[in-house]
Amino acid sequence: MSKKFNLSPDDIALFKSTIGHTKKLKQDTVVHKPIKHSQRYVTSQKLTQEKMNTEFYFSDDYQPLLQDDPIRYSREDADPYEVKKLRQGFYEPEFFLDLHGLTQQEAKKEIAALITACLNENAHCACIMYGHGKNILKKQTPMWLAQHPRIICFHQAPKEFGGNAALLVLFDIDTIRN
Image (tube, rainbow, N blue to C red; front, side, top):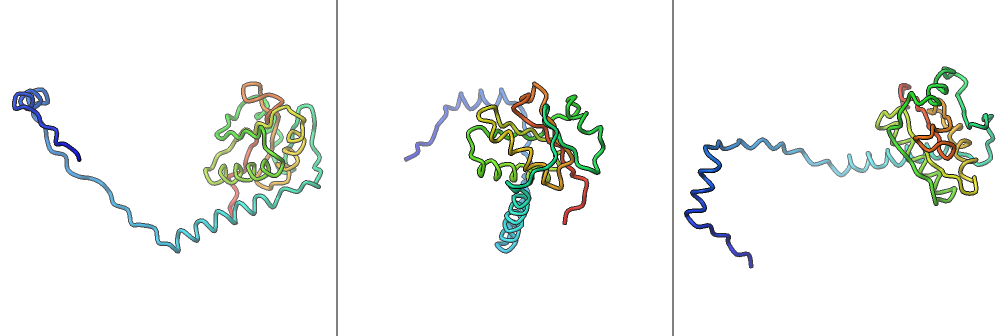
């Protein structure tokens, strides 16, 4: 049903004179080999396992020693100045996660996915926004984050990243993965 678009000889001549002398380009498209089914399966299985491992760290019963007002946490072996750098805005988040409107279980899965993404992308800092609301996620999020071994520290975000309704999280991406 397509009609061929025909130009008059005058239009073709005008087009050629406007364009001038042109050079034909050499085709340089690279054709990649398709991924074998077994490789795709192993890759997706590995990602699923990493996500499950990350979710495994989050217990609702664990009560870490957190400092309130502002909320902050630092791992025992961490540099004490890292929390100060987070507070002062030295680190800019590379990933943002908004937990508004999520249940605790959904929030836990989203945080696990964020941690996995940050570690895979070698992102040092992320911002998790949980909002004000009923403060359920505000209380639970720091408790979950303190349990993960790859999190160096976190601190209440500066105002430009959400203030007391958000956390800045610093990841340890330099350690060797298992």
